[in-house]
Length: 603
Image 1 (cartoon, rainbow, N blue to C red):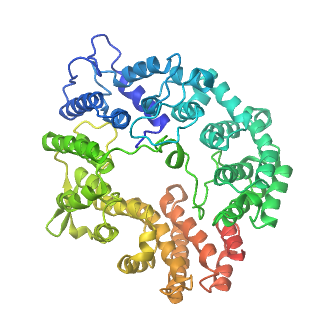
Image 2: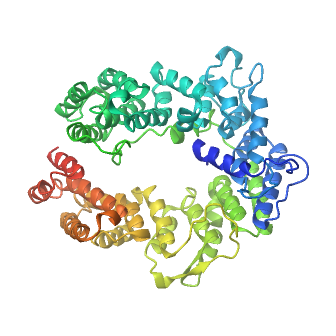
Image 3: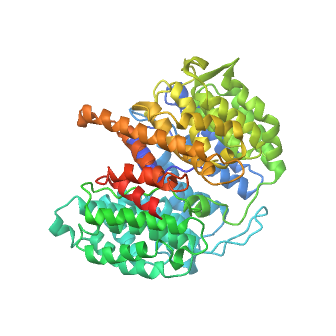
């Protein structure tokens, strides 16, 4: 499922409704399809209403629910218009009525309501609602089970709440979330609320240090220290591990500032003494090294307190990370799977939309829906037709729709991997001369947040797809060879090129890891060449930074340097460069990234 982040959804709702509070605004969800006088927005509104009608006629509750979950993504931005439909408000009213049911009927349709609700007034009561007032989950005909527990209603309500906003602007919501955080029960729920906890910690860190130690955030942090000690000695569990790693980083970032430095130091020392090999990590590949790395960063933050109130960034995981949404809340709650005939009927409806839609915002939404509904065999059969408009002969077309088609095509799991890798490599390796000029026909002439497209957009789209499929590097020598050549290049200066290099860094490291692995296709000399090139690129970036005005220092290039410093520590030992890399990192012992990298080198 594609979901807007709760805070982003709330902001969009406030933005689109702020100018439409005058009487006489057309209805959005009922009556004739609304029009606002902007062709792209009017087209999107009409598409939204047709989709609502299809949901009502859907052949099963599962199909209906999945269509309804995509409806908020079809609300166009209408800020600045005096008489615009209040789509988000109307949907909130619908959801509030449905969520007040007595008893509350728990089904796939209720899950869809909860995933699209954003109104705290409707959601907060569900967090404290007695489970006895909720029916057992009603399995639909396409849901084999098992049925989810009633507690999922509370979890979905919490997930849809804009937690950081509530902490600052809603006293009742703040207290409720604080109570849930202090409860310390279900690790999944605690993970879900970590954003609320982070908002509390940052709020306290920005205030007066003496007063901050008496606040809710520091109190919460103090409670985490003994709780963390218990969790680390508890049974191995991906969910508890994820929570422990996040909280361990926060204990390091804020412990000294909030007066728990000695207790935090004892906890961190315990993890480091065990090199991360604690009961919570046993049997989980990569977990011990992840835990140890975060602990070393936390130790540095305790010894050299951070100036920023922001939390420390977590390093890229080696473990199979538990994702609150991807592995839990966005999964089908009862194992539902749409029947092939219903999926194909849905695809035909979407094909019909593409035949009549003119503007890219609407067309991209439909293309994304197609990617979600195409059965594997149909996706494979239609792959070439989906991709064909991306190219004009040998050139890559540069348009909003072309970028959408790239994104959807590279996500089609039903398509043979080799075909997707060929597309990926063609997009990654396209030179500026092989990419056409920007095409704006079909774009919304009145976008609220316009993102300019340029030649770097093509490679960035491909890099994001590769980041989701790093295993392709192990299985496709041509992709690996291209990455090897690119990994030897210096960190590019600023802008889109630096952003793309940052996206590609995990792929570059995958190449290094493969060549340092000792496997049948490994070439240790290639790993050493890349790591040595990275040391040179870091020296060059540092020299450039010394002559540049610190106020305009390139943040993206700085992030690239940090990533490469970490990679030196991660791979230097296996590549046979421990001494050389160690000396290089020792020269930068005042930098947090180099300190943590030196520790990784020693593990």
